[in-house]
Amino acid sequence: EVQLVESGGGLIQPGGSLRLSCAASGFTVSSNYMSWVRQAPGKGLEWVSILYSGGTTYYADSVKGRFAISRDNSKNTVYLQMNSLRAEDTAVYFCARTLRGYNYAYSDYWGQGTLVTVSS
Amino acid sequence: DIQMTQSPSSVSASVGDRVSITCRASQGINNWLAWYQQRPGKAPSLLIYAASSLQSGVPSRFSGSGSGTDFTLTISSLQPEDFATYYCQQTNSFPVTFGQGTRLEIK
Image (tube, rainbow over all chains, first blue to last red; front, side):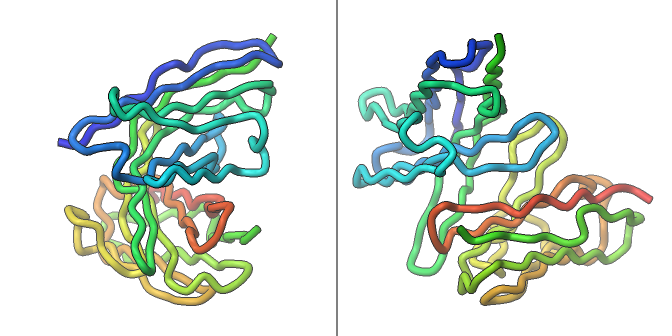
């Protein structure tokens, strides 16, 4: 059974750093594309980042230069390192497995999310 | 960036009704479109990918159509568990973008 479990969220002051983890089971992270998507309180979904199986990464402009996605193959875990956090980064962060084919890409499994609150 | 605009932003309907939600892209995205359902406090759940392909395990009352810039999600006969928020997502180019969401409420 495929499962994704996020952790690492919490309350952090503006300018601080946090690392989110997404532990996967039922599939191999290194053979798949993995994404992070966030949702501010009461708002819609916002794509944050993706990590290709080959190691290529992409980021939303709003987090580029501040966030970094990575993985640890031995732990079958994906990470999101978040630096220089701002109040507008406050959100529930979801990780998701993303499948990509010749004419499609979509996220078929999602974690339950972890809440990040940036406030003084 | 490609802007995704959903309409309506909210809709009220009754069990058994047929409901359609539209999603318009600011430029052509071929079929690189997915639809997700999100219930309050839960993660999104994939319904449709490649504009019209039904995800495994999703009831057949859900269907998707469209290509290029205009897409539609249709629920043929609403069930109580379908009252939720629906999002479209384009994956044709980065940054990936979502529509603002359509809240489906019970009339």
